[in-house]
Image (cartoon, rainbow over all chains, first blue to last red; front, side, top):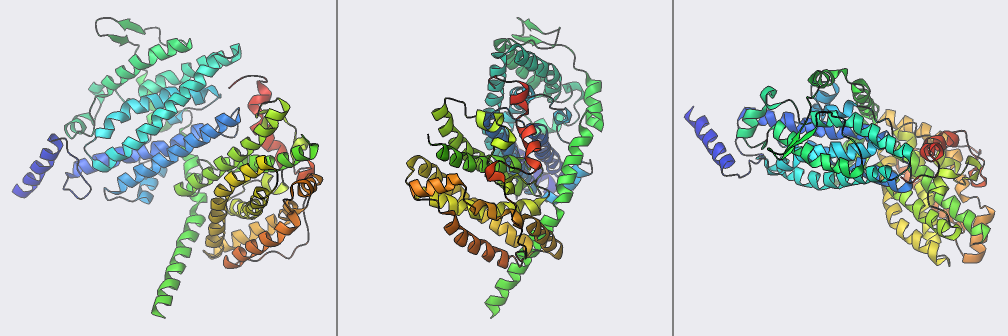
Length: 317
Length: 248
């Protein structure tokens, strides 16, 4: 008991000194579990997040946009890769994590359960969804777990590039024809509220927050981050000449920030539970890619085994 | 610009464009995350290559680079039938890629030696990328051919289907002959020997065999395509056709 508590003391000292916990350091089981849940959820979000945008790669309207979108979705695959690797340092392997995704045991960000109906959605996702993701993720670069923090530094650099790219798509649409402006406004209407939901439930209803804050996995509360996002985004919408679909949105001089309407939490929980517009399609696409790739992975493993046998044979000879 | 040079550029650009478009369909659906990233990289290289080539024409003709991929009709595309064939599965994709890469690599090496400096410069740049494509597709052909019984069978089946599309690349069109005569390269008949020899070596290492078939499917270089191209273009050109004349 004393030993555990002294290990725990040491652990908390590291946290309090703002130093990093590394894979081989002792850590409370709950810290490990929390990180596995959060990092894998994040990795899954990157991979599932490839689908709504991937939906427009083959139809992108110009060569420039096609290349940028392909590169962006590829970056997301790369983020998934770093994050699965970061998660593996906690003693769980990628195939187990993928099983958890495919069986519905693990969650991913609900935002990706919304459909991408028009090209403007590529702009809105970059601007709003990546914008909200950055708001959530920048503090994670200082997360107490070393491998996660380091992965996030790289992820954030790329995300901020994606966000600018998304905003630029919106800018071009808003300077374009009437039809393009309507397209841009429609995309904002559909993505605004789901983007606010990305920060998670209100602080009073958030289950995992308190310990995560103590352990410096999380640095700011859901509501704080959501407020920052709204304050950052409203002027950007004004610059585009678009209207945020919230009749209660109003600048509050006293708090130097915007008051905004109530989020439809029933919708949020419905999507989390699997009843969003694309939950089934997204999961099915992932499971299908994985199942159809089984023979490829088997063959690669068999080939590697044969090569190893050959090289050990030649060594003995 | 000589009509023959323009046609030569379109043949080349359309190959890269259409294959890049095909490969981009994999993005988000690859068999392993690492391979999803790799195949997307190849798509990016190919579309980038096509873009450089379309830009040459755009400058010359006072058009936009996007007019070429997005505003031409099927019969105005001069890509090989090989590159428009559907992805089907990872086996077909790798076989198609490996056949194409063997042509592409030697083709670029030849164009890089040609007297057309503008095209030679693009060939030099793309050659660096295509060297990697060739390595990637050859390694995967070997790995899957010599992997499990199931993978061997799938690869052999794909090879049996794709083989008839392999030769078109080396059959000279008038534009190819014009380039050879005026710029000294590429000599497609000569390329065929080297490319075939290299490809057969990879196939042998993969424990696969080149099918005994005499059929050669051709037509793409003359604008006569398979049924697949129409669907590919319908998707690719959707935005430009639906909203003509807009900036994106």
